Image 1 (spheres, helix red, strand yellow):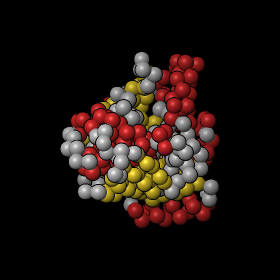
Image 2 (cartoon, rainbow, N blue to C red):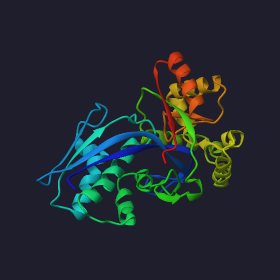
Image 3 (tube, rainbow, N blue to C red):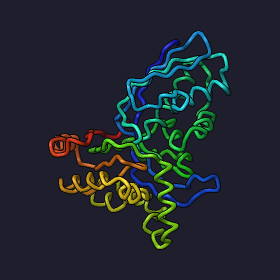
Image 4 (cartoon, one colour):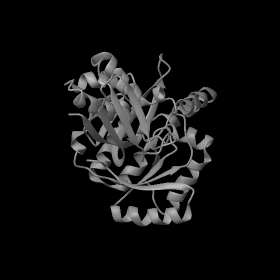
Length: 301
């Protein structure tokens, strides 16, 4: 095998509770991941030398390729298991960058999975996950072939939700044309708690809420789902980036209720009952809010 092309899917966080700050300056979280149908294309091609080259059609990726997670994933795999191998990596971007959709993490995971095949390394998933944890908190999720999973620790301790393997949700996804720094938002979360300890209850929810949300998703009952959707970081991001609040208001105006920001934002999504409803409402949103990027997505099988 000399070439390989993979779909690199985005994710949504249907629940994200920041629990506490860790000694390593990261945070322990409890989250519910959903893999969605929005994806980048990753093309891998073996080189005759041991160089790693990354190219993309997106001007939003780092100009220094060594700062790209896809490059770092290839370099990590090369350093540990294949010092004589090289690869050309081409990334066709469709997932907005810095939006809370895990595009960079997904690209890194796709490179890990792809090079494991392309370089005939035959590494187990456990070994690949250990490598992924060195790259970022969300990378591990994308190594699991599952539509839904729980994430613990930094978000890198993954539990597949096999009871939801056949569940499919439809979404309207809106992304404003701004880039959000995840470390910056977490610093804001730390500052907010430091300034007012009484806000801890509002920014962290008990773990049992995730279980209640899972039950609601199984039933596909939006009246049960939306009160249990939660994101600790939404209040922080909305305060810094008012566009997030405007998106939420636009979705509420359409009569939608199951609305949440994904990750550290600024992407906001709503759960709808069908693809038809999603398409109809997205057309309205595009006409009335031309400054936003609007997508119709569903759970990726």
